[in-house]
Image (cartoon, rainbow, N blue to C red; front, side, top):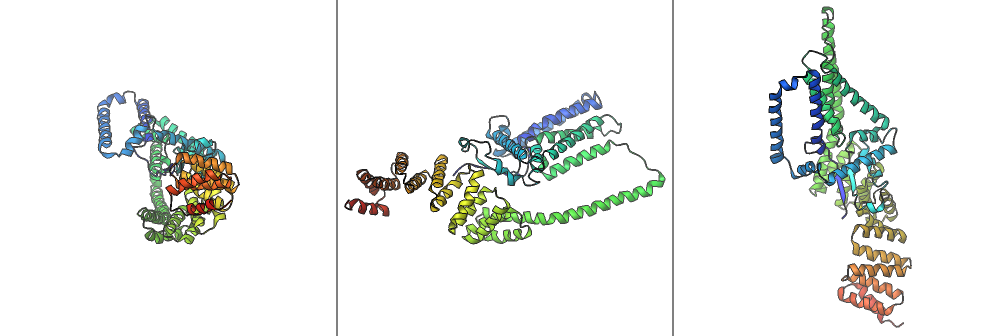
Amino acid sequence: MGPRLDVRGRFGGFADPGGVVCGCPWSMVVFLGARRVQHGLLRKSWKVLILSSAALVLGMGLWWTFGSSATAHGRLTGAFSSDPEAGRRSFLMKKTAQLAWNHPLLGVGPGAFRVWFPSVEVQGLAPAEYATQPYIISEHGHNDFLQMAADAGWPAALLWILMCALVSLRLFQGLGSASDGDDLLRIGALGALVALFVHGLANFPFQIVPTESAAWALAAVALRSMEAVQVPSESLEAWGWFRRWHWIFVGIVLASVLIMARDRQFSEEGLWWRGAGELTMKNAVGATPILLEATGMDRREDRIWSLHGQAQFDQGNIWQSIGSLREVYRLNPYDAASALRLALALMENRLYDEAEKVLSATVAYAPNLPELWEPLGAVSFQNKKFDNAIKAYDWMLYYHVDEEAAYTNKAAAQGSLNQLLDARRTLLEADQKFPNSGNIQVNLAITLYKMGLRKDAYQAWKKASVLTPSNPQVDFLRKVMQAPR
């Protein structure tokens, strides 16, 4: 119905514009590092460099021709054009900085970015911009430095930036300071780190555990290689042997603890993916026990509750769906999609007051999600809050959501407030857009009759009787028209 963008990407890749751009600083660092180690090093190795560059270009060409998808092509070419991808990332970064500014000292908490991001999406936007800026669901700010500030606060982000700068500076200063032949390793490590830091300005490499772990492990190896190697004396050989095995033992224990701690999370994520897959295949019955098992493993994970609520809703188990979706709303009050599903389930059970509260709170931070306005208009009308219903129907017209129904319902709300002139104006405007709508003609006839314009009401009724002769309101109006005044 309306624009909605999902940028939940969990993995990076060569198709990302940042992945291409970060090759430039890597090349520059390698060039400067090689000059610092030995001025003639590049000249002496020109054959190897040419062959390596040719192999790289050939590999990228083969990947571009045979290994990449249309989406990858679009993202890569978008880095050098006016593709909307650049605008979306710019918006994400700007709003990530705004979220960090709203929580400057401690941030919103590690891993809570996706929960809090919708709370700032429309802050500072004029209503006229809502239609051009779709509602975004994102787990990443596409800038590691800004997301660190949003997650943990500006002090932590500045410390992290300082650590990255010190590690890079230490590696660069250490080039050429030893004659152990490991300078090329340090050059490569430094180049890779700088490339990842630049990549982090437009993506999230340090939000991906394998990439982040490999980067810091590589930095540790390079830094360690710069330390002077001391040969232990014979009296310390036994202690050195014990120390080596001691750290191996400690490493095994820590690894075992981590594996045991992560096993539960891996199992939970496996259930999450299985349940989501079953729902994708429209198998709500098969998804329900899987998701129920997942909720038993972690009752704080709102996304599992959301999928379970969706599965129950799809099966028609409305009350069970309400229970799960209420839990989602408690854990994540900024999940607009789940809030909408909760409101629809509440309306099914005639819990109109609660549904109106949920929808009113949701449109406050997600007015650019068009699907919210139709149920809000309906529940406001049901609760006889006609002013709120009129506003909701105006937003439906703004987003072009079921416009014919929006016009007629808006006119009905105006009529309920005895704003008959406004109701007539609304229906005449609707008649211009939908000249063959019997429903609009019926409502226009009723409005004109209430205004005492019986002749005009008769003409509208006559037109409605031709367009929708089976409409029960047409028969009712016939009796009213024929009744003596």
